[in-house]
Length: 150
Image (cartoon, rainbow, N blue to C red; front, side, top):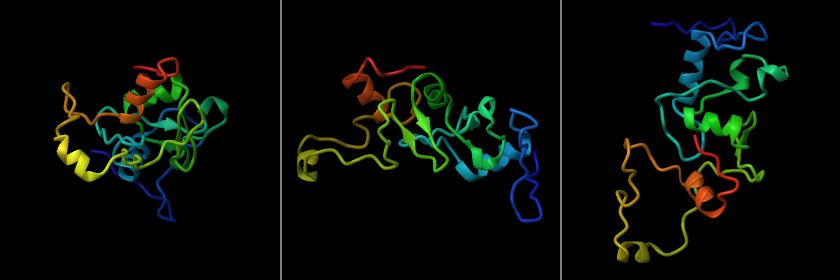
């Protein structure tokens, strides 16, 4: 068990520039703030990584304000797939387009969806039950040259 330690102002302790690795107490604070992967449309809470928004190698501190919690798959996209995230936790596709926190509703009326027999189980993934990353799937289908896979 790791105890969350706060400073006199109630803020979680930070590691600053002393270390790139996130200490256990700071990791606990990050998990408490983010709960799961912060990438839009993803709620994976297993296999998450602490990601420096401003990379440690570029002078970014190991502080809660400079960290975000992506799942392993989205962490790879941030480092190798051209995706970015800023300090407001706005994620951007390789094109620079901001990925909305809530997906845009698909075209068509609710009646058309009902007539088509679309249910919440229609796009349930067949692997481990994790939700479909619709933005990544559509990017892979529509722009395969920009898609990155982990």
